[in-house]
Image (tube, rainbow, N blue to C red; front, side):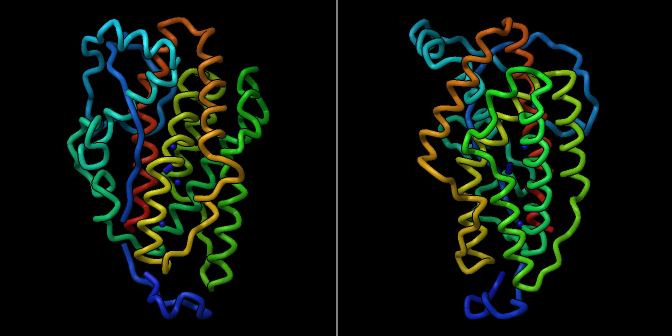
Length: 281
């Protein structure tokens, strides 16, 4: 995870625009199922402060049949949505908002410097994910090459734009480096957990991430639309293609492996949230 930050409107294209400052947040979807607890193989970051969402309310036979038809991605979507607040996702969100990134982006007070750091750290995360699927140390990672959802090249163009405006591009900070290292370890040792992060990072950006980009741009970039929020082709079709691939991969997993993948959602949100908070710095 994502979801990887003000310029007076008359000064956007001056050599060194005067910028205003401050905040951001993500979006997604989710299910309910009791997960057998399993010790995770990685130890990056802390789970302190993560709200534990009870996972498994009774599901009607009709709902259960519909989920089977939609595949495992529907389970991932429902789990992710429950980790949103009511402000973020009125129908499915269950989490109590604590940090500023868990509020509606319309209420954020972002800074240009923070947003730039968010983009830099996000690029490191996407660089890492895209390299992992290219190398495909687990055979089915190769299914997710060249999906059209890749963001690294788009982020490189955006960072070049900021440089042309007179800004220095910072090095990746601790949140981005920590998440990238976590992804490297998961990809080698825990493929189900890695797939959880892959799904949440790309799908969250295609939904809530776009709203975040729009709101931040309205406040600090004179409504400029960055390349990070543009895709070649029909985004709906690109997402559906990846859903089908994820469902196909999950067909070979045991129920325990699927549950383990779903369990990882909380950590995905934690890491993405740490990068998102950079927008307010």
